[in-house]
Each structure stands twice: as C-alpha cells, then as structure tokens.
Length: 293
Image 1 (tube, rainbow, N blue to C red):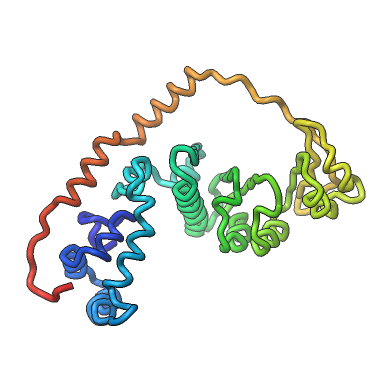
Image 2: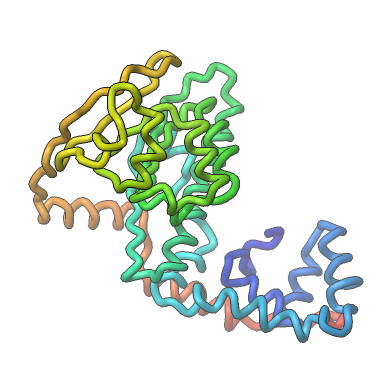
C-alpha cells in the first residue's frame, strides 16, 4: 500500500508471497516497522509446517480463482478506482452493478459484491466529517442479499441509518441467512414487505403481521401483491396490503446507449488495463543489496 506504483491490488498479494525479489523491493519502500519486522524476522525464519515454502502455495491458490478469470483480472488488477463512492452518495448519483454468476462465477460475483458493499458502507461512515448532517440520503438495494452478507451486518444495520444510508435487502427465504445475520436483520430493519412465501417463512414472519394477517395469508398472497409493515416516524404502522405494478417495457436500444455512455465516461478498455497489468509484471526490478527475502 505504501508503494502503489509497483502494485497494490489483490493480484499483487500472490507476488508478495511467492516472489522474493518483488517482496524485497516492497519492504525497502515500506515505512511501517511492524510490517518489515514481520517479514524479515518472523515470516522468513519460520520453519516446519509454518515455513513460507509450505504456506505460500496454499495462500496463492486461494487467489487463483480470481486472477485466472478473464472478467475478474481487469477488475481487481487496476490500481485506481474509476469512481468515488462518497462522491456518488453526496451527488445523488446512481451506481448499478451486474453480478452475473454466469459470467463471473459464483465465488467471484460474491467477492465483488462484498467488496462493493463494504466500500459503500465505509463511504457512508466517512460522512461523520460533516457535522451539519446536510448530506442527502442514499439508498443501497441488495438483491440476493444472502450472497453478500457477512457477520458484520449487525453493525452495518445499526450504524447506517445515522449517516442517511437506507438499506433494502431482498432474498428468497429466511433460511438462506445465518442465525446471527437473521437476528440482526429482524432486530434492526424497520419496514418489511412480504410477497408469497413458503410454510416455514410464513410461520417465522407471522408475528410481524398479527393480528391483521396470519401465516395462511402470507402463503397465499396473489402475484405482484405483498403484505407490508413499515416504520413511520419511529413507530410501526398497522400492516397493510399493496399491489405492485407490472414491469415497465424496456427500450433495449436506450439501455445499450446508456451503458456505452457510462463506459466511455468512467470505464477503461480491457486492452488498456491488461497492458497495464502486464507492464507491472514484466517490469524488471532493480537489484538491491539486502536480505534475501
């Protein structure tokens, strides 16, 4: 991180672990004495099962699934982000992210999802520097929430509202969430919309809608209808039913044009990014005198 020009991306973690010459160059530019001491006095001197020779292949293999993917490599290999998350929030911009598992793979899609959610949440927390709290609200909608949820979600759900970050989480059934995440969701989320659900979920959600609706009602909601309980002015309202609109027709030509415009403004060509990554990897490191690490 202290020498971004030589690489500070997820792709470079494997190089730090496996390439002694690259690691030595990084350490010579590091100003953190704890990091330097760890690598020079602990990591390289460990023996037995804890030796670098035994640990490196295991760690590096965990990154292969990302670095070997043609779609992932240009994403995680860039030195600088194409956009600023705090700016997106404060300027009321819209960020749409397509995490298609068919294109990225399940593990890669989940990784990017968790990274992006973390970035957005950190941007929200950075709003603490505005004592006037004049910043506009920002809404984060997470589909397939179970794929990007982490154990820190309880802290996220409780802290986000202080910085005008509204969360909308959507998933198919409650059992998709771990128990601790499930408890955090029901303990912090103020408004719930339930479309037709199965018997297990209906039983679990019934207490949220009684006495107006029972479990049988939740299992027999008509298509495009839902039962809703919202938090208004800090007070739960009486549950009620809603009818949603059918999806609007999509002008595909307009979609393609908007995507192309966004890519031109914020994106970079794959060829340019791949060339940048290649240049970092083939760049000859200047020999230095020092430790062999």
